[in-house]
Structure formats: C-alpha cells, structure tokens
Length: 112
Length: 112
Image (cartoon, rainbow over all chains, first blue to last red; front, side):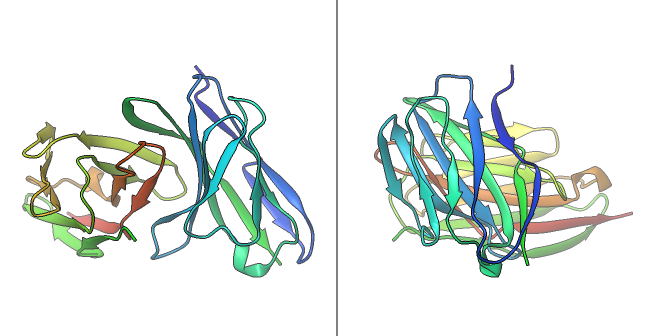
C-alpha cells in the first residue's frame, strides 16, 4: 500500500527556474490537495481538486499551476521559482464521504 | 474566510503534568482533525471528530469537539517525553470534505 507518493523529496532551484512536484495516489481517492508549510504558519492550501479535470485555487495559489488529468496524479508546477516559494510542500488525498486525509511524505524545496 | 486558531503556540511542560491545547475555528463545521508532526516528517493523523460532543482518546491524548462553541481541545494527561512534537488542528471544508484549513500548530516540548 503506497498511499500518497511525492517526488522528489528534496530539491534546490535557482530563481526563475521551473519545476514540477509530483503527487500520485493509488487509493482511487477523488479529492487531492496541495499545501505548503512555512515556520509558524501551519499548512496553507495552494490548490485542490475534487476530481479529474476539476481544480480550484486555495489560499495561496499565486506562482503555482495544477492540472488533474487522471484520478491518480495531481502535479504542482512552479513556472518561475522565487525565493518566497522556499517551503515544504505536502500533497494529500481524501475520499468522498469518508472523512480522513492521507498525506504524502513531503517535498522540501529551496529556491536560491 | 475560515480561520483556525490554536493556543498556545509553544508549550513546555514537565513529564507527569497535564495540559490542554485549544483550537478555535470561525465557521460552522462538524469535522475537526488533530495531527501530530515530528521534525522533518509528515503529518500523522491522531483524531477525527465528526459531531458535536465527540470525544476520542488514545493513550495519554484525548480530543473533544464542541461545534456550538466552535472549539476543540486536545488534553494531555501525565505527559511523557515521547509526546514532544508539533500538534495541528484542522477543519474540513463543510460542503465537500475536499480540503483542510489548519491552525498554526502547537510546538510541545516535554521535559524530564
């Protein structure tokens, strides 16, 4: 049982570079979401999806893009990385009508 | 806009003592989650509280939910060093259960 798999675990980017954080789940969960965690601020919602082809913005969406072409995958794209995007990113999935969230192990991103 | 506030943000306590972490939220929601996070790790689900008056206990931790007061508490009984971690409460999106809003977290240190 893999659950929610995030790759990579660590990444260092230069300002202006682009990259995609991968998130995959094998539980057939309809809902998936991305959060960033900064010291003293808890986790904040970036984008979320309630099913394939459906995405919406969360609290801090600027600088990030998402798409959901399959139920399993929900990648997060940084188009032009900025130092303010240095953070730990968590992906989560949850199931319709079953109230519980499964979190990935996180991606620690540093933008220099 | 949904807000979730925890207090205290930092808690240093001695082994054997009792203490309570408070979580206030600003919207009508019947679903409240408590997570534990160890340094450099992902979130570990502790409790899911799904209705007014819900009380759940696991070991030295007990969580309760008062939806009328929009308040949840996490009570620690006879703390031990192994409970040292950061504890988050989070509230579910009321309509879909697709995303969470987190409190800032309470960093708990239990001293011998």
